[in-house]
Length: 216
Image 1: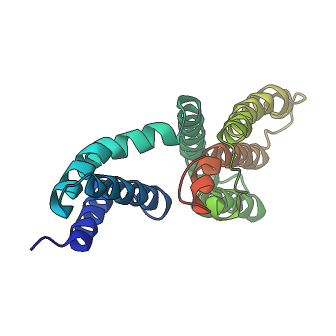
Image 2: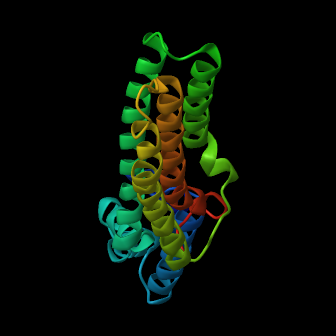
């Protein structure tokens, strides 16, 4: 004998398996499904036939998942998220390389090496936990603008560092030794700043769904 509630429970499992997560999207879909079933039953159909027709009208799991994902985040927001990720990856690679030099060449002192390690630690922790502390901005347009500005500030800040700070280390008076340790520490912190700002651009999108389960 057909069990309507059991069939709806199985349908929910299929939706979850396809990647449509609770609570908001799945609950909304179930409400629409039950309303459609009620309409079909009122028109004279059996529960089983009403369920089958309603499921067909609601749509298949994979197609629904695609539609939720497409509606959930705009192309601009995706671009900002990727840009933030790119900033973080590039900064991490360069800063780790510079840290390796900082720890292996003889010129830097202990303080400079510790400062380099602290910069890397802050960068890693910011990417690991930033989504827990960033504010939840419900308007996607505002999130995208702020995230984009963070990515631009990330790139612009690094360019400004290279243009304004690096010459300070290179254009030294004749006979003055190059402060290798200071220069390497400065580079590590500059790359860490770039990674952190890029992480904010990326993390705003990650933080947005945490309060209600979906993008707005």
